[in-house]
Length: 190
Image 1 (tube, helix red, strand yellow):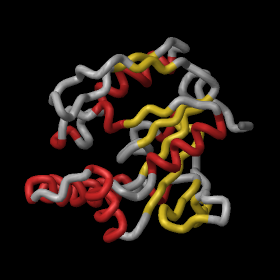
Image 2 (cartoon, rainbow, N blue to C red):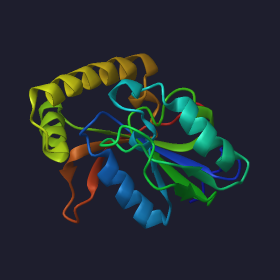
Image 3 (cartoon, rainbow, N blue to C red):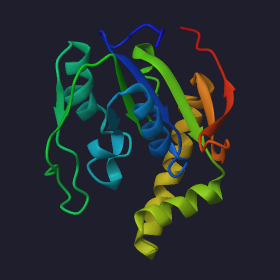
């Protein structure tokens, strides 16, 4: 990858977009191709109400150590236990680290991103994927998901995330080899 690192010596690539768009799948494919680890923002959320306020935790546990060339470590949130009790995940300050999840390419991190991807898909497809993925069709889950989606919609408008992405990806269209299809490339005025 010929792009310059911006998070210390690390090339931080963000894969952002709304829930159910296909970010995790895309990030997994990109990570495999680059031989890079993926930090999932969902692992750092403290439940449904921490959708955008988790950033301090991400900064302290992951970004700050990587910026200094140190190994980052965090305990992913265990949604069943409602606490950060899952085994620790270590992230070495390699050449490339991927940050995946809603708000991964938010305004605060843009100056330190080497590259930003925004994955999107039609609302109904994203809804169906979320219900299918999480295996919960209960009324309570649907209310959480509705609230979550409304908040992320507001966030993306105010943050102008897609407008600042280097690559826009259609999370529904796939090429014959199974890869997602790029919608457009945009350049950041950095």
